Length: 549
Image 1: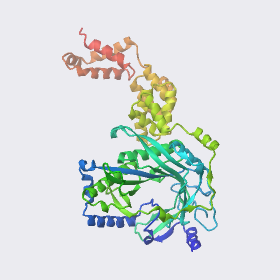
Image 2: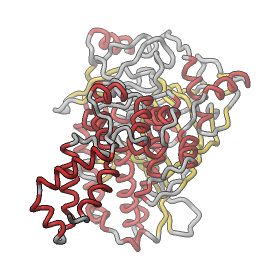
Image 3: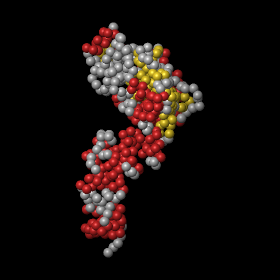
Image 4: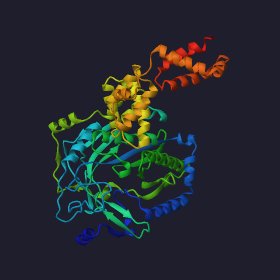
């Protein structure tokens, strides 16, 4: 029967299954099921009808009611590794490739095919474990996690159960200033290696679904947090920090829209002062950090509402989906327990043994991590807003570090990167690695403005040309004759000419309309083509405006 099933895949790029087979009872589910969303919505509606709770009222729970309860939040994060090949075979993986074009007998689960561990998976797992301050297991092993689903060709997933490669760590997070700021430390229960399943593609009619096995066997790291988070913002920032971390380490691109980083949130609530945890509910289908925050806030309100109405027994251990359009969670399925998976050691793979020499080599190769970088920037005197912006993207951080390495003013460098450069990148949809401006030239530009060679206005014009076309600051200054005019007598002549040409405005100024000073300064700047030194210009202008002849 298995041979018949996979022969169908070989002769047709996509395998068809009746939609009735997709009431999945075990394992993880990552793709949207158009035909089943209506079913889930119906279940939610029926459940709401039984409990007489109207979903739209959850968000309107009084603040004082929410303050009587404490939310307990933990997150399971799956990170897809950017190795050249899959975890246990030589097939490459490319997001968006044609279905079933990157498969082999191993990732298809054909009888007799044996897995061979990709050593890069272990290396990346150790890197992440060290970065998360975990204790590494010198001897770990793989296990079979058994469940049935059409996108899991072997009928089991190769994972790690009781001996993960890393455990007992933590991650430091700085909350954004707009959300109150502050520093948080969240515990990491474990990090373990596993393989991904395939993907189901559902038709619009819901008559059948198709299987793409390209993703089957792609290496994953699952990061399980301690239940240390208490709000949606804390959870979202924790997930964002993991994304920063894997990008800094180079183990994953961390793109949520591609499924390279997926978050499953576990939430329970309890009255303030109660030690026991409440009933845990899992939320899936979270494809952005803002979705994580909003889904958690909704679910907290839903559970608090049920508690306050004496219906706490209706909070059951289940998996719920976040509906972005409706901005609510809906029932997906009852939550399975560990015993359902029937774990046992993977007989086709040897254990993973690490040595101190191997760990030392990886430890010495780690880059400066986000938390260490933020503390360094903070010690430079930058504001927390500046620190969080600059350290958020490793490429931006490297650009900033390279700029100040050329002795550029630290605060001015931060301002240029966060202001005009960031705006240009956003408008042009470019990364900082794609613009033509180099850190060395940004440092030269800052020095030229600070030294009085050019004005800030001219500096902006040069900046945009450097970003778009490249070149050097000194070359553009010379080519366009942009050297700032600092000769007092030359600026005085320009001021005299402007005042003589605007007698009516001069009379109004001396009659009390002092705001016209800006008008005169603008006219002088226009005549000097923006090259007059602003400070000297305003000084001379004020002297002449307030001296009647």
